[in-house]
Length: 91
Image (cartoon, rainbow, N blue to C red; front, side):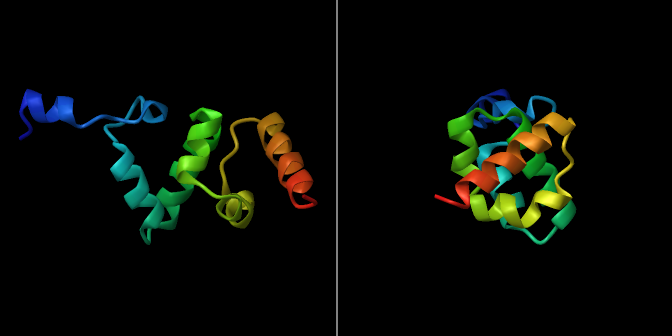
């Protein structure tokens, strides 16, 4: 069982406000073999992380290759990312 000090040292990422996940945990999931967990983490990052923080965890290749599997919360957000990926493919 973690002590209070150990819990304070574990800094959870803000975009997983409802789970006890650190940056290290998020990176481990993204590197792991569990595709369902990866998509879940990618979805949360794209929906809730600040712009600059998205790129600390994901690449354009990650987003492109998993785009159809991401569980978009709204059609608007999906369309926005689809448009951005289209524009960036011409740069």
